[in-house]
Length: 343
Image 1 (cartoon, rainbow, N blue to C red):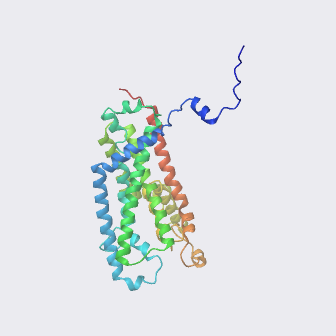
Image 2 (cartoon, one colour):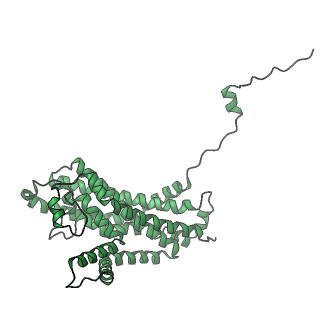
């Protein structure tokens, strides 16, 4: 007697389908995340990171403690002023020629240079770059991961330093920041990280283009010194050549000279950063113009600007810093992709 096979149902049970389905390999994390995780761990465990944090912390805490002591001495004069807590970060006295924010503006680029000057050429000098390129990751993941690692290390340092300084200010002054003050400090922190990332992108670009780490570090430091110490002088000389203002010049010629000088000075990221943090940490600052007319001064409404208006005031400067970081990083990115790596 012939037997016939029982037809299999059209829809098999889910368990049977799962048993017969091919096993999918586990999904690998993105290559840039792996590189960033490894480089960030190296940064945080390095003696360079500890030394930088120690030096920056000592200098910043000393400046803030001195400013807090001076503010306690003039407490009756500043008791009625708003945003007293923010003045701890911006005010300067004879004993403290540099405020905390001006200190970050001058020394902050060293963080970006320190975490990026040997990002690529150290791998090349140690002969680990060919091995790194041969891994099953995209080539651009290497430069992306190194930039993210440096940016994360910078964010950790600046955030921790700001928290420590704010705690010292609260204990030293006994003034708790308001919600608006906290928002302004957060905005300042984001702008500061963006400002330092410009120097990180520059140092990574030099690390790609220059073979030796010491040479790339010296080149980055030279750019920093020239823009910091001589940027204003160079902008002034160029402005006098483009729009001269003689002692007999009219007020319009003088204003044109000032405007040209300010426009040229904004090529420097340090100048853009200093202009941006002014309205953020000084709510009473209502304009970034070099001068205002008597009619504008007469119609100005007294008082402080809200946080949203201060952000609108400095938004072009933030975009300018972002554009600088993107252009420098893109130049290093393209240069690294076009570079020939040999074993």
